[in-house]
Image 1 (tube, chains in turn brown, red):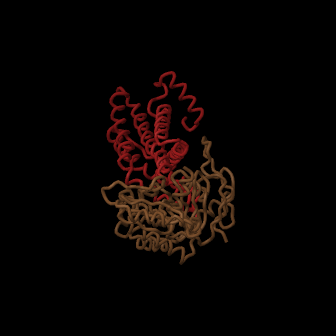
Image 2 (cartoon, rainbow over the protein chains, first blue to last red):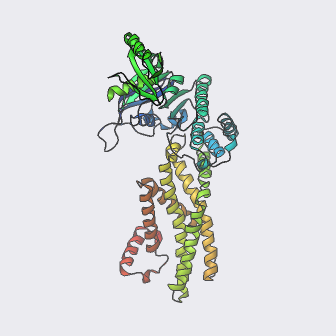
Image 3 (cartoon, chains in turn purple, green):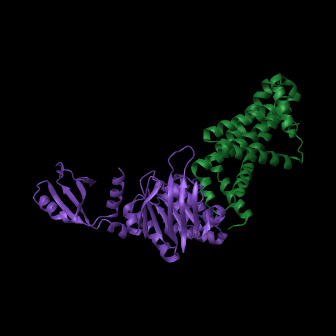
Length: 304
Length: 207
């Protein structure tokens, strides 16, 4: 059973010659955690806005649990909880009011909505700021509130646009845990946009990489990484204060200050290891399997 | 999904919370400006003609309602659009009409303090005798709700908040001057009389 079936979806904004989404075909299974990756302007937000009926596709069809979206706008709203990328939705309310309204307008009775408000306040650690007006809270707290509002009344599908932006590591882990929990216990389908490849690799059942409005890669993180099975990830740390002495013509990229990453063919590993062990500038180096981030950067590099 | 009346009630309460940020504007535009208008017009425009005081009083009451309805509702809708509130509400299982109805009703309620303040202060300043007509129960809500509807239309159709602000100010001024509720018809300039007659023909209730 599919939660979403998208076929040949194209979205062209008025006055723009290049479509924001181009012939996207995609199925997302019920109970799946699906992560959309891609650089800014790749068309991720446009895609999910069409999935929640905020934008009308130029061409193509979207079905939610088998029903076409264009004929059933209220059906989508009943099934899907949506967290926007930005926005000050309900910013003038207190946290408690916003959570209550979100739960009550999603169909819970007054007493259930009050209980839901309490539950969400507790799981998101928002009890202390319950009576504060949202506009006066930090960016991270606002993200948590938007996420809590999307999760109110436990919709069957959650669509989250960059839910962990602005969050500190502790709260990022909390969000991952909550997403995994609702997915496991309620079989909620979770679709979210992210720039964070670590989180995608950690919680996604499947990821899709978008570029220029198209889906360029889709699959399980482990399966995608297998495409790079002939390669190894070489990470080299150079001595502080010394300029990195990189092998000529090697497409190294700096992963952190003084640390450089290179994807090499397995057959060439010994050559690199011999060279690096005798290099006085090299402080340390590690060899490992490529990460999802490596794959992502590789895909994007092909485009450049 | 909640029944329509519960949706309207929730959204009405949500919109009422606007008083937290809009009370300054309510006081300044809805009460102080009309009261200042009463003071200025009663001193300098009536030229001792007591019969014109009624025009000054009614004109500034209308101004108070116009500010509180067209101005505030249009800027509220523009704000809701820009800030993503409308988009968020569009993703909830609620009717669009519930959103518009609740907003218009809430802003009618929010317009009442300014209206009442203008009545009380205007009566005090102008020292006129007022007779409370039972029709006020029907007329004031009808005026407020219909003007709020106009405000909602401006707020939803304007491309930017600046455009919405300019349009609502222009329309407020247009309705205010051409009523004619502030200045008697025979005192308008010839050009304004033509426009006023045209407006009265377009909107018969202005007669």
